[in-house]
Image 1 (cartoon, rainbow over the protein chains, first blue to last red):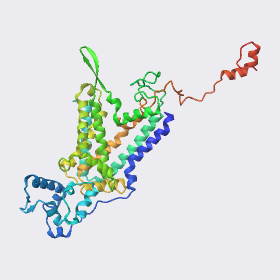
Image 2 (image 1 turned 45 degrees about the horizontal axis):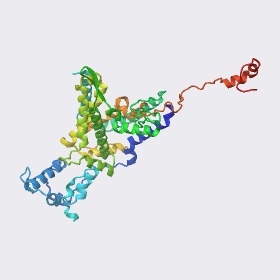
Image 3 (image 1 turned 90 degrees about the vertical axis):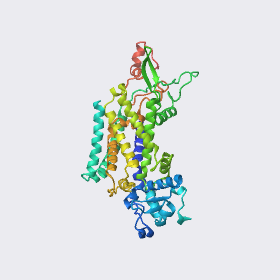
Image 4 (image 1 turned 180 degrees about the vertical axis):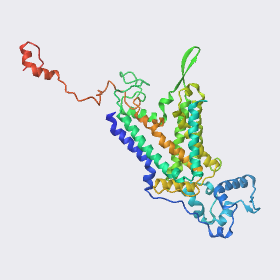
Length: 128
Length: 332
């Protein structure tokens, strides 16, 4: 198909641009992972509902469980492994210590393009 | 049991173990996380270009009017302008339907014998499976751009939002991943279960299926069962696309298995049946207008020959011809 060479080459150029487009769009500017910053209140407290590693992995599932427990069963008390009792509340319990939602929650969520729908209903007390 | 699919399955399992043991035991994170992905993408791009250029050199002497519809004829016979186009616009429309909706696969029929007669029945399930597979794979691919772009563009976020529309569970179920695995399992089952299809299937048919099952399986496993550090993974992938690659701590070995499967798929792509992605644009039965008799088609690689035409012949011998009383076109 010697007559169609220009069309085929145009197609190949589009193919190469499409495959390599993330490299063009980023223009070589590396964006390292954000560093998580803990609020002074959280550091002062020294403990969370679960150990740090578990919180990092499972915080979304804990919150989901809390939501279901509070909304569907009216059960508002969470008891952790050490027998500590917590009020199941995102705005009151979590954000009481982690006062810096923008630094503590949003940074990583935005970087990983995770859009939790917590804030569809909840308000950040700081932002009122 | 069939040696073709067992060997394909074994190959994929061995590849998976290779990546797992390589990163978990031998600590070859930079090999599986940086070197092999770069190599695979280079092989993919160069291989695909070479394949297409090779196809472009192939002779296509005639237009092939595959008559899925009435061709252009007399004025009072209605032409099927999409299936048997005689214009470029018609060809573009036909290619559009072929590439995006797999129109010729839609016409798939199944031969069988009913009441002693051979019958051809419309068989739609391959088309449905193929459509589900390709579009869910495309959606998965587009969604994965969140790992390669920072900030993540809104159009990619919206794809993910629509994909997780039903907000089932947490992390929310994304339909495309589940549909992808289901569709690829269906396409595999079809080859394994149906005796006629199994008979004509080779390792080259099974291997990509198992590889994609491996990719979708590890992907779903990471999202819904294992907990992997997405932020660390994004740091790795962003490093790759900005040529400042490094392997951050906290990237689970299963991620490297997933990445290695994808790298193998990329590197394998140009040398396999998967190149139908490029080949579809060059299908002679789809991309040429059926205008064999409306337009004069000159073979493009005809050699330059010097012809001695009758007019020239007459010029050479005109006087002698007139002398001999032979008729001439042009008097002297």
